[in-house]
Amino acid sequence: MTNEIDDRISSVYRRTNETDIKVKINLDGTGKNQITTGLSFFNHMLQQLSKHSLIDIDLVCEGDLNVDSHHTMEDVGWALGKAINDALGNKKGIKRYSHVYLPMDECLTRCCLDVSGRPWLIWNVFLPNISIKEIEMEIFKEFFHSFSQSSGLTIHIENIYGQNTHHIIESCFKSLAISLRDALGLDERNLDRVPSTKGTLTGNK
Image (cartoon, rainbow, N blue to C red; front, top):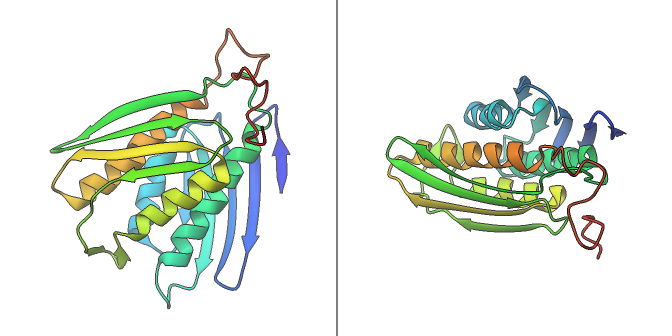
């Protein structure tokens, strides 16, 4: 694992009996991405996350898809969140908070974000018990949960209304992406300080 705080770049390698994952990110990128997980719809969602957050993401995952998609999506969430947390370093200068209402055709989703160092996920998203490209919809919650845990982010996502399952899921990823873009962005008036009265956003205090 490498971490260049000044450049806000990091790499994470995670290998278990279930998945083998390599991920590299640049928080100050342009949204370039190369993503391979073996799950085409999941690839598409991660591409949306990269594109709209402007975080460059190179990610390769080889998972036990012969079992199902659960381990791949959960572990990718963990690795990607860990890479973001590592790239943030001491979090000096970040804006920290953000929120967005994201419309997508008939669908509206809200994401509220705090780069708090205290992982928490509120997931008020109802999804029909169906599958898209061999991914059961309930597994997307596991991605967001593991992502919040390893990134140290407090994330509240709520689908306010919507009918199309594809639109609902995609709006969750896009709203997270734009919230990340805002919250991880640098505040020119506060570059030398951590945005907390504690003086730290490690989550340990």
